Amino acid sequence: MIESQGERVRQPQRKRGVIRFEHLLDATETLLTKWPDSDISLALVAKEAEVPLPSIYHFFPNKDAILVALAQRYHAQLAEMARAPLDPAPAGWQDIIRRRQQSGVRFLNDHPSALRLFMGAGVSAEVRTLDLQGNARLAEIRAEEFRHWFDCRGIADLETRLAVSIGVMDGVWAISWSQHRRLTDHYLEESIRASIAYLRCYLPEILPPRS
Image 1 (spheres, rainbow, N blue to C red):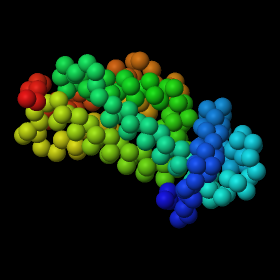
Image 2 (cartoon, helix red, strand yellow):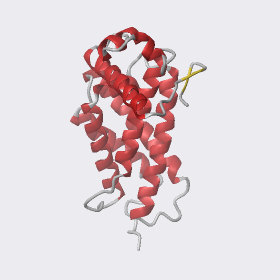
Image 3 (cartoon, rainbow, N blue to C red):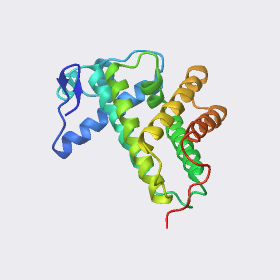
């Protein structure tokens, strides 16, 4: 169950309910894209989705709940991207950082509503907490990827180091969003540079490939 302000989202079990649930999230995404600087309401979501308002309350007790559900969907998509194998193989651990950040920027720029959810000034505490939890999971996935390609024995607290590097990346991206309402190539390069510079404090410049 998704928790939101002490209330639960009713997760659909049947196919028809799943389709309606996802349709409502699609409508919310459309509204966030159309009106990036305006608040939305469940009534607006109902109008956009062309469904009766009570049908939304069947799943979502309030506006924050539907925003959290949408944020969860984005993080699931980002996690799926992070698990996709790199092809060709990375030339070094720095290459992993670069290529994963490039794919993340492409995804977020293609989903401006996700940028607003995760970086907007009015982001709810629930969405922010979910975002931090999602970043921690991404750090675990990234650590698995590092160990898949390279011999990481002797590197202490790899997950923690990668989690901090993701926080550094997020900070740079937030600057880009606040100034341009998108993630620019300039700030992408800055986030890659900043993340690699931080990780160089704990990782050797060259990690031997895993045999």
